[in-house]
Amino acid sequence: ALITTKHLLADAYRNRYAVAAFAAHNLEMMKAVVEAAEESGAPVILQTTPATIRYAGLGTIVAMVRAAAEGAKVPVALHLDHGDTFETVVRCLRAGYTSVMVDGSRLPFAENAAFAAKVTEAAHAVGVPVEAELGTIGGAEEDVSGEEGLTDPGAAEEFVRRTGIDFLAPAFGTAHGVYKGEIRLDLSRLESISRRVGIPLVMHGASGVPEELLRRAIARGVSKVNFSTELKQAFAKHLRTYLADHPGEIDPRRMLLPAREAVKQVAKRKIELVSGVVP
Ligand code: 13P
Ligand code: ZN
Ligand code: NA
Image 1 (cartoon, protein in one colour):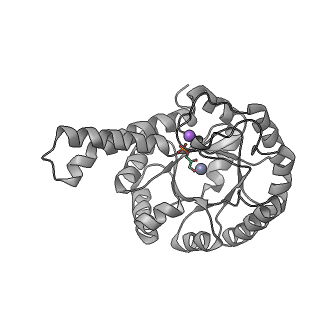
Image 2: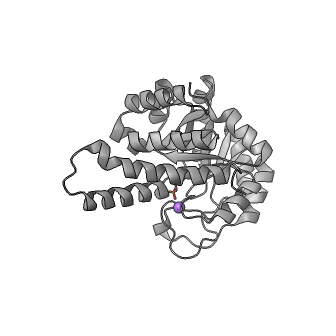
């Protein structure tokens, strides 16, 4: 059965490793990620954004991931990524998600906190843990530089106290998508946020972050690491190549197999890295 992320991340936090969380847009990516986790012998989190839920359908996602988790040799959790409305969160809770993120990071502090507290009350009532974002984790294309938008450690402490959330996603220099130029993470900020809040931290925008930086972030309290872009890149690259080399192929299974395998290899490397299998 699907497990919640509560104990999963509590154990990771205590023992200074992290659980990888992957965006899964379709059956192939979902299967690839679960197989990667099984081969690595590590737990894994599958996550979907509201956009993916609109694409695939909530019931289909839950049924698919549940079925995969049932047969899996490792624990699997299903998480809502960047939940944008209370309604979306509640629909996911009812459908069987075992973890949710509420993203009110674009709101002013007090409204973000009120939104996160409301979601937390609902989710905790049904035993589901909550991740929330404070600060601005932008897109790599937005080119935010300097300290603007980064999470203030004191504000983070106040936010966690007010909301009762289980995990915090702070802004410390990562960005969604492909980084342009050098990646600069504010690891001392991350460390003081961790010390102030005392709960597992979540790293967004992990695609494109060098392995050594991932390790350093995990050593400073990051217990969940989100990957999306690198899986999409692997999927697209191998699908394109296969179709170019096999213009007569009409079988969706055969044409998607190399893409699925490529996603699995990327996921496996990330899982082994964040869980500490790869030194
Ligand atoms: P990337 O696309 O940069 O891997 O970011 C993923 C993410 O943070 C999903 O919430
Ligand atoms: Zn994110
Ligand atoms: Na990224």
